[in-house]
Amino acid sequence: MLSTKYFGHRLSSFIIKPCCSRFYSSEKPWEDPWKHALPKQEQTYTDFKESSIDWSYVERLLPKETIPPMPLNCGILPSGWRPPLNPPPSLPYFIGRHRMHQPSLFLERRRDLLNTDTMDLEYVELVTMAEISGDVFECEKDLKEFLERELGHPVATYIDEIKGKIKVKGAPRSLLEKFIFEKGF
Image (tube, rainbow, N blue to C red; front, side):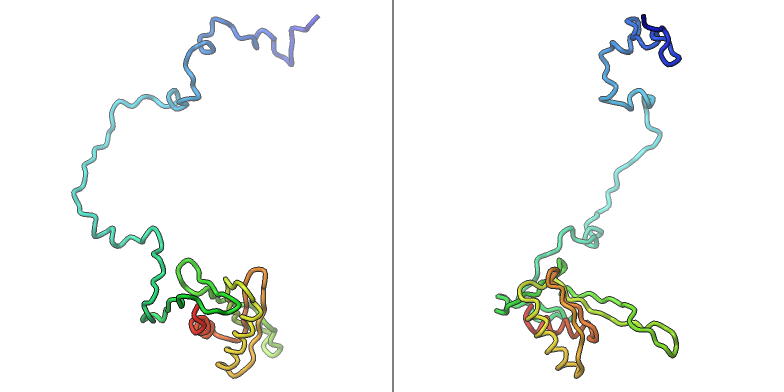
């Protein structure tokens, strides 16, 4: 025989009684859960009116939603930007640009060596050239020759063939940009 107690509660309290209309109503509270939670609002306490301002002057100042296509055959602009050659040069590698049509060059500062006289760390600037596809080693060889000819001293490079990147130590970013523009990318 079953006990009338079930973890301290009577079994009769768990039985759904037919007199309870909440369980047998046709309302579905999951369709609009806020209907019962919030009281009905008959009127609003704020007023509004539409503005008759011409917004065309403001809309001109807003940034564009999409980046316009790259302008080709426009020559060198006053900012120093150049479009890539069309068609691209026939080299065993290709240097792409990022979505804003700029060469993918990134500047990074890292701690280099400890100066034993002052006990301070010296910092070095690394320039990373990204979005290189094709023969990355040939690109690094051409880049190294160009930089050493321009600077007059050797530069250190690190190649990441999988990611298509070359890191250069000892050369300014502007020279790498000059290399990319002279090659026609």
